[in-house]
Image (cartoon, rainbow, N blue to C red; front, side, top):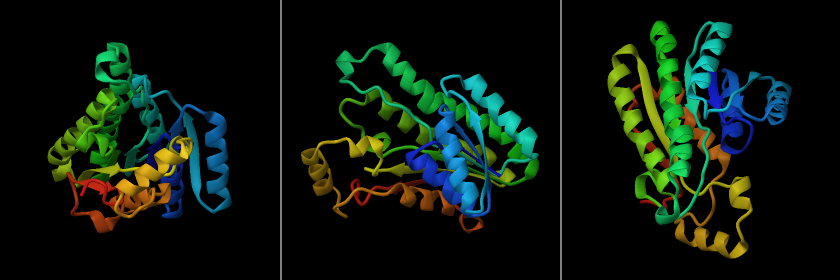
Length: 240
C-alpha cells in the first residue's frame, strides 16, 4: 500500500490516482476532507482502492501518528510519497523568521517525520520506496523564496542520507524535482508571465501533473529497484 500527502489536488492528486491505477491501495493525506472525498470517488469509479486521512502536516507528531494508524489499518507500508508543501514567498530582507520557520516546518521537518515513521514498517516488510517531492528551486535557488528553496534543498540531503542508511534493508529513497507544472497556482499567473516562463523552458511548455505522477510510478516500481539516492529532475530542460 502507498501513502501520498497533499493528495487533494494538483500533483498529489495525480500521484494518488496513478498509484491506484498501478494496483496500490492508496492512503491519501491532506487537510481538505471534501476535496479528498472527491479524489477517493474518482479512484473508486476507475476501479482503484483508496482511503482519506485528514492531517495538518504543520503538526509533525500528528503526521507521524497518522502514518502509524494507517499502517495499523493495512498491516504494511510499501510506498511513501511526501508531496505536500506550502509557500510564504518574500525577499529575504523582508521575510520574517515566522514565515521562514512555517515553510521549513511543513516542507522539510514534516518530510523527516514522515520518513522516520515509515522506516520501521518498511524495514519489517524488507521492502520500501520513499519518494520525496523537492523542486528545481531546491537545486538552483529562486529570488523571493529563501524559505522554500532552503526546505527543498534540505529534502535532497535528507533523501540521500535515507538512501545510505536504509539501502541494506531493501528500502530505496529518491527525490523528484519538478519544474513549472500546470497547477491551480500556475494557472492564475498572468499571460505575460506564462509566456515568459514557456520561453525559458527548452520544451516550450509547462509540465503536467500526470508527468510527475509517471516519474513517481517508475520510482515506486520493481523496475527502479537499483535506483536510490537520486534526484530525478522533471522540468522540460529548464535546469539543463
